[in-house]
Length: 566
Image (cartoon, rainbow, N blue to C red; front, side, top):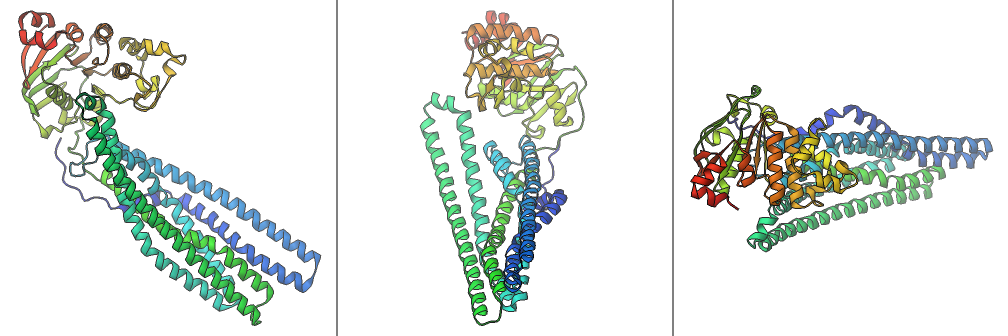
């Protein structure tokens, strides 16, 4: 792998243009149907004015019946065009939001540039709220155009009655948009800041949930909660600011629209009183003045939503344009093969060297927890190869030469704090639904008692982060997932710290049996797991200082005995 060149961030406008380009067809049909809806709405008061004029002039039942039939056609057109137009636009909106959500999540699963410094909670907010608000642009543009159609049709109809009425609508609309464009820019900047603060609060929550147990252990939970209260309060205050700006925008838009509608009504009344327009035209003008408030409201609100979508797109660009710490290779390792750690120096690791032969079960007893975490991070490819000295080879290939997909498929590192997802036991063990070893994995991890405890068995519902499971059950569920993957090389980091000694003994024997003939590395201080390993490597001060079977080390190494004996 090589460090990539710094790339120029993609502006938010590119993201918005991509969303619009991908949904051209849906937006064209949506615009046509929503334009037809607004035209029908506008035609209603026009038709009503014509009906009044002709009915008063001709006083014919036939003319009245024809007018009623015309109104029925207009109402049907309005109803159907709205229904199908919004259905098309909302489907496109939801689909586009999903696309961006998946794209942001995919980027979030890979390392991003250090200068961005986004945590998982922030990326989650961007992948949900910001993706949704960015996709809203697909509905905003057709609604903006259709509202413009309604305003133009109303202006033309009023202009045919009297040119002054038409000009009043056009000039008034332009003035309203000029005033509201200033407020819409304020909304965009305030919304962007709000999303950033909400994301920071989300990241703080994620950190607290992950580290709650150790925080309780050394009494740091109160300080952590105070820290969260601070960022949460900042997010709340910014949300209040955004609400105030939105309220000012909505109030101003409503007031200006009402002033324009009132001006049209009063002008039409004066013209009718002066005999310059007839009664039917007066009815039409009054009806249009009332109707025009709705498209004007939509028309005046659209700039606000455009600015919100742009602000959200800018936040998505932080993730989508951030270069990875390294550029992955494209090679794939051969089946089988050894796992080699050759002179690795990273964090607390000091010239670490060892080889795990294909099919071997090796346990690593790390005297310092930090060294165990650093080793797991290097093996999981969470640390770019140029960030450490030495090399890690899988089947003779260095990690830097392999694609991320190849590394994940061949070498699986299961962390001690593996995530549990909302779903079922089955979907947590086998997320892809392709594993053929789920029953064996459940039995080896001793998750059988959890399955038997519930009527639904493996289909028992699991809450987010495994909130309805105990710590030991969550750990065994994570272990079952790792075993069900059946990877060529499996690295387990402290897989049994939350289970009792008897269960731990059974898990150790089951794992050794299930993984027989497959390369397995367990980083642990558990006597049960150390005892079933083919050999044990002692990791002290970042280097391997001893190597033998567990029982031989117990008999001849006092430091080892002190570190692992329970």
